[in-house]
Image (cartoon, rainbow, N blue to C red; front, side, top):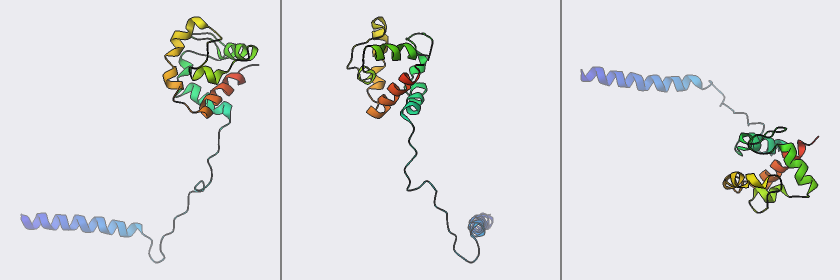
Length: 137
């Protein structure tokens, strides 16, 4: 019984070793192609595209805001229009450092989201701002 077990283990080990050898080409050593994007800078998104990605993704903004319809929060078009008219700073507001200009009655609801927006980089916040302004027609 011990012989059978030993032979089985030996055959399995040799079988694995042989399959590795079969994967290697015979003769010249195998070369690998470098990933074409290695060493090259990643293509950057436009600020508007970054903002849209954040708005619909990790920013969780789309839960309460739509582009042209007021739902729980004001529409993006309304936000952009009011911030533009009043020369407001959306980035400052999203950092939790500015007063609400659009709908102060909803400020307490929005304030809960500052925990998320405060973790975003300035580039991400500027992307959100660019996306909001891009919805103006």
